[in-house]
Length: 276
Image (cartoon, rainbow, N blue to C red):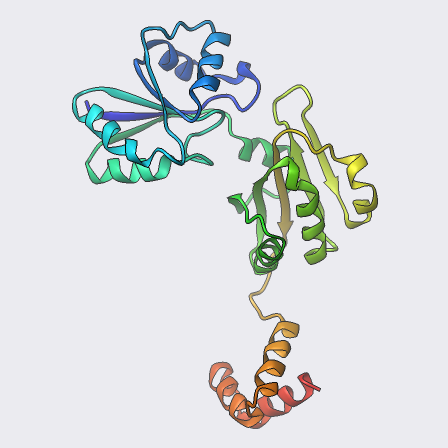
């Protein structure tokens, strides 16, 4: 059968390897890994001889290998895809490959295992339903603040990854937008120095003493049920900009009245107050 098998590996503690994944690592012959060196180190730690296996890399710059992998599968090989840790689908470039394989009617299988997302959700003790996973978020300060602002209208627990050299800035950006919320930081999950921090804005002055900026981070926070709406300050700023550049309050009121289903005079009065 032509198939690809996704193998989820431990995120830190090798004791979390599943029996099915362990059997696949022992018996499988063709592997594509995010980093071949890291994968071979794992095999060594598990006592698995890989001398007779084909092991090649597959990462963000490996799009050109998709056709090679497809050819191997069509020739009857079972191909195993792994990442350095966790699922090859969550934060690694499995999706473009799987999308292509689906188009070619290739069977996709998975050997699931531990995931940082669910582990962090459990340790956070935040409400689990619903939860939203965002992967790695934008790097720029402005983009991060926009990201946090946009989530104000989305209820549930929000989960994302962050790197150690950006964690302090991200914490600061978060509390600029959500000063009254709790931010949960899960660090080095399943490893020796696993830590979970529950932070408030008051912790910012001593944040570098509380949170160590080393290792891998999963960040979480929760929004209670929210009602979709608009940021009145942002709307007022846009209105002021429009009027400062020659726009008419009366014309603007007509546009808003159509959108809101209100009479023009009521909207005109509201706009006049908001831009004073």
